[in-house]
Image (tube, rainbow, N blue to C red):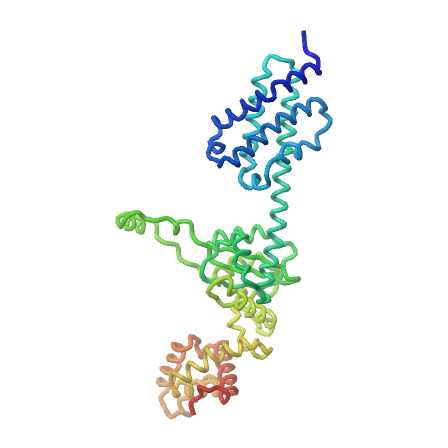
Length: 409
């Protein structure tokens, strides 16, 4: 004679302890990750399984109530369990619980078996909802923290907690960092920017400042670099079969990231030693972005250091000191002849013959000295854009030279 629902409920309550014990045994026997857990987390997972059985009995009593399932089953677990147990593992846990209950009720009322299937569906959806909410909360927290970190970098006003905040975001960058500034597109695809960066072995911190999109770029540590080669022979064979990937410059990385920006200028700040020094690169990039319109036919992306004359005219003290320290001072310390030749060459409209006549030397001598200038400071005076940079540096250096204690008369 079939049991009534009240009799079935009473029977289920009687065997609930037996079901819980069987479930824990099967978890240990079938799920390797469960046995590898620390005792505290194993206990929490077991508590979730036991609560699932108890919740099923309550649900069987009143199937119309489904909204409380997630809170009832997963509410007993500590918050850190969601971070240590994946959704896939949770679904495996649910499967084990359902299998144990099904095995025990085999041969009983068909309506009970159908109830088990319906409940397993509800609990699976509830688990997915719990993990989705946790992921959403984590994503919102990460976005707020990332915005705070980028704001701190742009303002240069940050404390000793900045490195830990950056680490909390999962920053994989190491060594040098550069900041890229451009316009925000109508539809910002942050995921695409991060995918592109990962493909280039780079990592990003992304910040939106109104109409400006700011990327803090760092080179990510390649996965293979952390692996230790056991011996010299293995190292030789590894070097023969797997040559090291070339390290991309920040300008190359910025070029690949360029499609993720809106229309307009795109300015890359200079390299700095680490992410905690990124504010210097950010200041240069922001200053360059503010005056980029003054450079007709400017490339995209462009280097902030290529905008030093415009930045200096706009009153950027960093640009002025960079021009003086990287052009004027090295030439002043190197040779008076190089300084005089560069002055004369620029004043004569970059004419070799006019410069040679004024200095009473052969044009080849002028060519040689200009080549030496390039070797000393890294800029070529024969190019129109670089000539503007050098002339701006000479003007600024001569204007401030009397204030310098190291001036040689």
